[in-house]
Length: 54
Image (cartoon, rainbow, N blue to C red; front, side):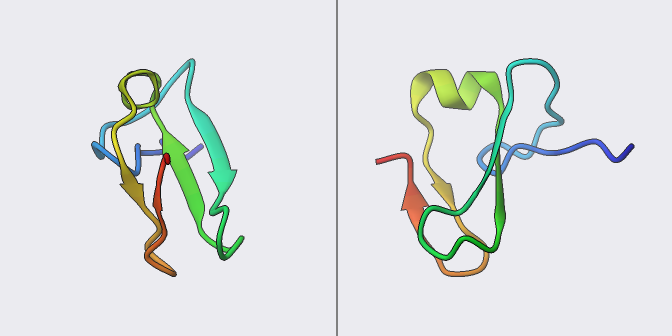
């Protein structure tokens, strides 16, 4: 199984990670490690440029 990497910090993710499709385009996979998710680090969709988490 391929190790997923956080979209924000590019570290490998393990337990506590969240994986979902981009809320705007619905095409790209967004991966959030538990640390970036906890402190609200921004992410960008590689496909459409959407910026989250807010």
